[in-house]
Image: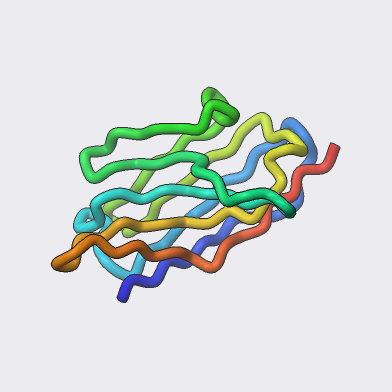
Length: 118
């Protein structure tokens, strides 16, 4: 089992910044990839940003240039720096890990609420 604990969400005004953290219960250097997803009310969960074992990153078009995903292997933590926030970024943000344990398994955190006021 892998536990993922997100933190850093909150209420911020449009144009502001937040940094989300996702702490893993195992060494993230052993995790194939990690990603941040979000789900707004009435909408499907969507990928926001991902980072692979090799460090390559990918972003949703809607957040490119504003969000940055990074990781700190020493702290077993992945971050999502969110700048220039918009009201449409309001959602519950989830951390996901893809782990190879004989077969590929996926783990999710409990989510953290991000609310951007206009």
